Length: 399
Image (cartoon, rainbow, N blue to C red):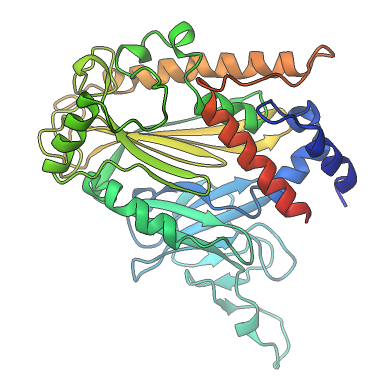
């Protein structure tokens, strides 16, 4: 066993309701191993976009803790996922982060697999060797309106409610027909839970994200207010354009559309659209932002002219790999329909600020002076929900 179950259970019981987790959960190698099993090994995870695999024979690889997985688009257009591990002696098959192949060939002994995961060739094996029982181990994969979700568990949680509730909200943005304008990957020297806690609240935004707060709305006292005149008018305007607003909430997944601040139409420094061609069937593009987030690893915003997506993978107790993508209309031309620097500036600035905040948070958590602190019930209610969700999943894994 890579971790002491009794120690983890005891520290979970010590956590005060409405407070941050005990220190070990944010810095201890043993707890990192536990998270890989209890959270990233059992829950649905955001993994990318259909347009990451625009053509048949394309593949991408992802490293999730100890496990590498490969997502492939076969000749029939279907996207499938497998553990990136040869069924012979376990060698990793695909080493690159993306590429195109007609077959998956292990570099060690050339065992060869089709893009459906079936073993096609295994030289030197006896005549009675059964290739059909040695295909790649599949992972569970769901595609929703151009987004990809995966689960590494043998028996994943039911995804049908998420797909049913989320698809109508995202479908108008037509992400499956869009293109990636820019992507970036960074490593933040902080525990993945600190990365996601920072992304789940805006208590810090006025002080640390002045650029973002030119267009991001203030936090309402209630999480989803629908009884105020301005909110009612916004919902009615969106629905008149064929855009449902939500909210949709289900076991760690949440999506809702909200109005931007001060009449802003996009997430840019001046609040005006960065792309001339709108993203999908979104009317005049003045539609606020559709925010969607999945515990444990992602959040995204889709506005009228582009979408910004953020997701992470734990690399170590104090290290997290963060991916970001900016998505635009497939016909938008850089230099003519958008300026890349202007398109990316607001979220890139925000990400740089958040990197510093997370790493500073980690340094403080590592101190002998750290004690679990109280969340603000009003301004950090989403953190209470996130940490309660984490504790529930951890206890479930230990049961």
